[in-house]
Image (cartoon, rainbow, N blue to C red; front, side, top):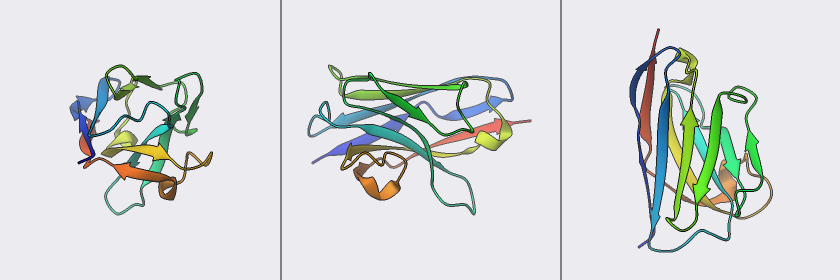
Length: 124
């Protein structure tokens, strides 16, 4: 059974940092792009960042560019999201996604597998 499990969420003050992890089990995703999305209450799920299979190419939403860093360790079948300079507007449930089916990394429909999400709350 394929599973993606996010961890590392929590409560942090404005300007603080968190590091999210997404651990995959059941199969390897080392040959496909992966991504992070988030969903705030009452809003649609939105793209945060994506990374290609090797980690050599990364993509970010404008709202997080310069503050968030996506990375992956294929040997551990794990993806990460380092989040710095957090703002209250970053508050959301963060989801990892795997098995990108095309180059449209920012589209939710592009991914075959999703985690259950981890809550990130940034207090002002």
